[in-house]
Image (cartoon, rainbow, N blue to C red; front, side, top):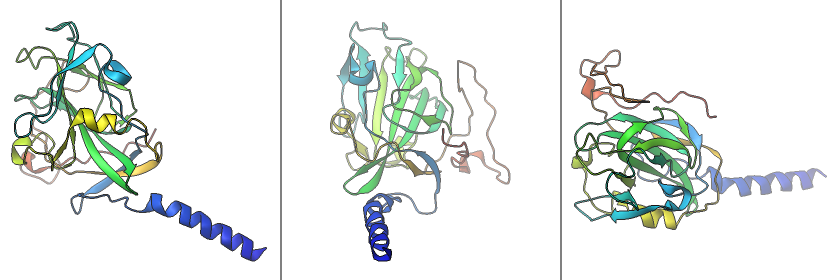
Length: 251
């Protein structure tokens, strides 16, 4: 009886070992903090969920120039202004504010997914939004409403600019990193190849505090804004702080 129990315990450990392995993933900066989230069980399109019904890609990824997909409503023009934008997969919202510049209102969600016998991490990036309906540190579910399609204050015709990043350091600082496939995935192809994944809906850790934020604190839910510089205690320069407010319990 003892031997049988010992063998059963050993078998259970062997079966669980692959899921425990590689939790730190590849390409994660040293010394960062981690926070809990739910692993992705698959990825969907960010508009017309789950299959982008009613939308078309007006522009895809062009290496060195345009590192994501632009999604437009089939009717064209600004007919999709205010239309819903959804989280592509389960994950943790690590950025939800007005980035200004050419981005405008932006949401970034960090995802963990199991592939090639290890945990992998990517950021999904949603920008030019009209409104943001989530906050930093919040858990996101696959298909959850996170924002609405916008024009970045009339800079563009209404559309969603959407990216999938391999490099967790980029954040809104795209100009500091190579615009190529070493840092980005082709979003449409990435999603099509990962519609359903094993290892989903598990409590896992994702790295946070991996990229710098701008000093300005602008916008969460709705259209309000403030220009108050954000400074953590003990630091003199607001531009030096990193993302670190992910203490919300997993829900």
